[in-house]
Image (tube, rainbow, N blue to C red; front, side):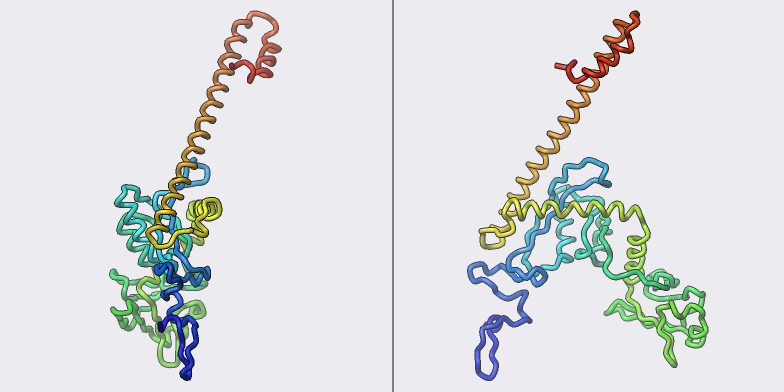
Length: 320
């Protein structure tokens, strides 16, 4: 009851408390449905994984390999590892996973790296304009700074294992006289020159620079734009935008059947396209050999070139 009402001055008001907005019961007829604050809707959230080629020039039928239905208040970050685990169990684990930045987190990158999967997505945040922690010399554990970019040794490192962060101290007079102090992340005060940084910060900065400066990475990520197509088809053409089922189990079945139907359509379209391409090549080869044969039969006459031109003009009519 505390989720649905508020009591002020002995007055009971039916109003959903913002504290329980995402996890509160929204519909007594579907107790599992939750509120999605991003889209401002009540229901469920589906995650779909499909195949793609390494570039837009390569042919690929784009088959859906994994479907997952979660509560609407589930973060996208929480679904990456579970999806890869299911694909691995089914023998469909990809070498590279392309996602948008809603799935980006350092934990996901590290966990997928252990499973030999590269997570490619736009990193959250911006690359530093000046120097970053990545420019400092770290120890082997990556928890302490040894030297700054100008070869100044670090005086002290205060390591916090609980927060996975470190506070590194430098000589304040040396930092104040440094010509790069305006672009350095070290904070200079009257008595101290220190840098507070998290252990994953160098990895985050490396990914930001890689995504900003690597054209191959950008070219590969262009394939991600095609990932919106299956969701659009499933929602708008197959009726998943408003499923007439209640309960997570029934909703999952509906999404799974719709994804299966889309796979059948795409596979049929891809095979038909391949068949047409093969037939077109076969006709062209047949026409070429038939023209060559006719021209060789009449090669002794003086009308070889006009006959070749006539054969080329009727190339589609020569094959039954």
